[in-house]
Length: 298
Image (tube, rainbow, N blue to C red; front, side, top):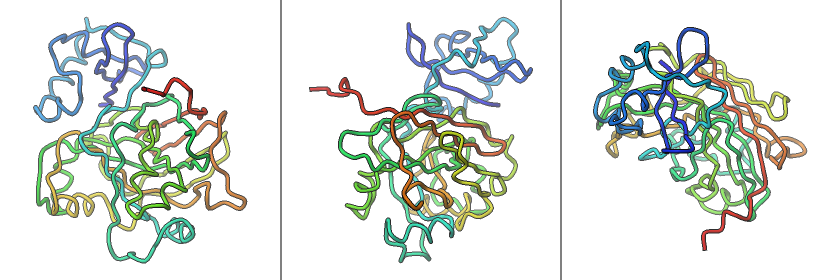
């Protein structure tokens, strides 16, 4: 099942399911069930994915063309947005001039603020504060149940599904602090989507083809089998320290090919289009614009 969150002009976020009949229509679950939660994190916490699936089978449910929808991230405001750094050996090698790569035997985690999340086809902004903006195509997963101290062999039990992330990075701000959070959390720098594909449709997330294009030029081409720490190990490690909650978004790292490591660097600029594809999960595409003046809130 492919679950989407989309915005409507009249009543905000709706929850939907992509039809499986080849039409690429979206069954509007929120229209069929007006009192049903519209936040996927809330649905997961309540254990109500089965009801989403059942509603998607109703012949009377409203259908909307997928291409006509304004998609949000599948979890528009995840409780936590965590990302692992330097999780592909080739990216570690190319990143020596970007960040410290000394702690190679440990998982290196940072958080992206949840306000950075945008959806498929929404615009990545080059901020006024910096033009050193880069892409990082990644596989991500969403936690489906509250959990702590999860052994790796049981990690798949707590994953609701998978999605695609572009871990957009402002490289000079990233270099300025060892936590990297500031450089990873600018508004619009967490493109996610286009949907959450439920875990039952991805039997093994560790052998998926991952590719990133900028303006049609292939920049990253790898397999998730190349990850140093796999998804199960990530869940075990994170849940050793703190509780994972339904809707938490976990991004699994990027392979080599980022723009800052190219010679000369190939950073994002207004007019570019970034496309990230993870085999069996989906395709996430976002245009790039300069930060508009209307982002001022004071």
